[in-house]
Amino acid sequence: MRKLPSEPSSVTVIKDSANRYFLSFVVEIQPETLPKTDNSVGIDLGIKTFATFSNGTKIDAPKPLKKRIKKYRKLSKSLSNKTKGSKRYEKARARVAKFSFGMLRKHSKLKDTRTDFLHKLSTEIICENQTIVLEDLNVSGMVKNRKLSRAISDLGWRQFRTFLEGKAEKYGRDLRVISRWEATTQKCSCCGFRGGKLDLQVREWECLNCGAKHDRDENAAINILVAGGQSETLNGRGGKHKTSASGSSSLC
Ligand SMILES: [Zn+2]
Image (tube, rainbow, N blue to C red; front, side, top):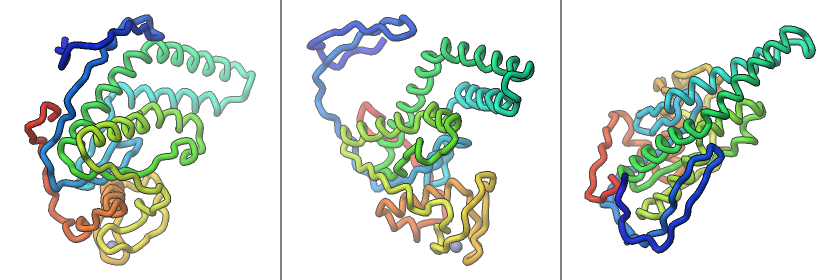
């Protein structure tokens, strides 16, 4: 159990859809400050890897989520391949329904895991960086496939951004969101050359102009950082610098 920072001015009892009870306290807190840092980071969000930082760090989503999303996608794909009304269709439909029911039951547990993961990750990013650049995500517009877009929203991109926004404001960090129309994936982050559109399967590529070898997501993250106005990274690229969490605030 965590100690409250000060005497609460009110307490509310909340019951969630899984019949769990929570106590919500309202407490006054002193605004906290974090030590200033020169670090900045561009973040590319993805399905395969949850987040890739412009320094090359890759963050995976918690496994149970990924596995379940994958399974759900597999099941619903097998359903869509079958003729409606056929025996095979009914069998597949039952499987999807059963799985969905199980998902529903486990949903609150999953939600906790995800929220916890997103809190930890956003805190770490805020601690380590003065400027954080994200791509604007319009999940529903970006992904035409509705099932896939649901899987994506299950990964929590939106919640992640909300957490980052809140923490950036609270701790005086600069969160910038760039337009998603920037060609972050196709552009070589070394020379600016624009290659063609990359198929989602292509994880690594070589620039036709300068010969630089790129990890797809890392290159995108660097471009996101540059698009956010942190252009010094264009020249500072090469060695991967490690960032480490340090600071005197209780946050880090
Ligand atoms: Zn290049």
